[in-house]
Length: 500
Image (cartoon, rainbow, N blue to C red; front, side, top):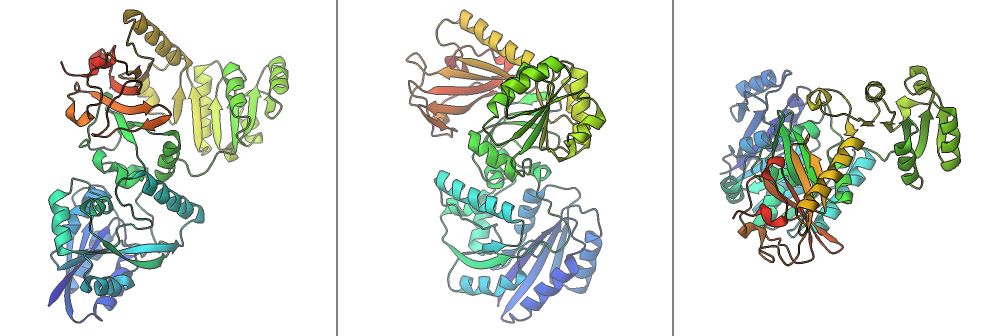
C-alpha cells in the first residue's frame, strides 16, 4: 500500500487547527487505498497551538508533531518539517484554509498518472483585489526577467513525489525556495486550478519581519524581484554579504535594484501598499521648493507649511499647483487641521534638526505611512536608529560625498570614481567607475575573478541597459561599473577592487 505524507507548518494557529484536522481526516478517509501520516511543525507558537497539537497527536497515531524551541522563520522551519516526511508522495499545505485540503484527491490522481510534481494554481482569490492584482503583475514581470521557467499564481501548495523530495533535500540551502528549485531541476509540473478562499482565522505571518533568518541566495524566491543586498548593518557594524549570508532580526539592509524593481520590492515587503496622493512639507526653504517642483506633474497633492509670510507669497507664485499655508509646522492643532492623519507622506524640511525630529515623531504617532526627515547632523546614528524617523536625508552628507569625489579625482587624474556616496552610516561607500582600456579583466566573467574581500559589484550599465550582475556577467570597455565596499578598503580606481 502506498503511503501519503501530509505536512502543515504552524505558527499561532489555535483557531484553525481542529477544523483543519477534521477536514483533512474526512478527505483521507475516502482514500482507503492509501495509508498516510500527517506531520505538523510548530514554529514556537505563543498561543494554544502546541497544546492543541499534543491533544490531536494523542488521539491519532498517524499524527506527528515537531516543536521548535525557537522561531526559525517560516522558510527554515517549513522546509525542515517537510523533509521529515517519509511517504511515496508528500503534500504540503498551509493551516489557514487558503490551501483547500479538498484538492488532495486530485493531486494524488495526477500523481498516479505519472506527474512528479502537482501544484495548486490560483485562478482567482478572495484576498484584497488590489493585492491580488499586484501579485499577478509581478508574476508576469518576473517571468519576463528570468532565464528559468517561472510559474504564475502558485505558492508551492501541492504534491511532490518521493524522488523530488529527496532531490530537494540534497540540494536545499538553509532557506530553500521549492518553486525556484523545481524550475532549476526541470521537472514538468501538473496543475490543479482552484479559487483561493480568504484566510479563515488568525493573521498571516508573512510580512517584512518574517524575512529574517533567510539566506540572501533565497531572497529572490521571497521578494519575487531581482535585487542585490549590497550592505548589511548589524549591531553597528557594516558587512558586505555573500549569497550564504543569513539575515537576522534587527539588520538594516541596503539594496541595489532598478527603480521599477524597487517599487515591486517595497510592495512585496508590505512597506508601500499604495501610491502617495497627498504629502505635507514642513518648512518652505529651497529644498522644499525644488522637491515640490519635481513633483508638480506626479499627481501628488503638495501642502507646504511655512512660517514666514513673504516666503509663503514667493512659494505660492512659483508653485501654483501647491497649497501653501502660513503657520508654525510644529503646532499640533495646525497639523491636525491640515489633515496630517490622512496624508500619505510627511517631509520635515525646517532649518532646525530638533524641530524636524519632533514633527516626524508626531507624524509617526499619527500613523503617516511615509516620513522623511531632513537633518543637518546625523553623527549620532545609534540614537537615530531607535527613533521612528523612517527615512533620513542629510544635505551636509550629500555635499561631503561630492567633496570626497573631487579629492579622489585630484589624486587620480585618470580612472577616478565618477561618483562616491557613503552608505551604512558612513561605514561603506558606493562608487561609480567608467570601464576604460586600462581596466584589467575586461570580458572575464565575475565568477572567474578574485575580488578583494568586502567588495561587491552591484550593477553594470551597458549603454542604456542596466544589469544586476551574476557570476556570468563581465565588464566591457565603455561600461559603467557600480561598486560597494567598506571605507577602509581605499578603492580609488576600478583596478583596486581586484586581488593583486
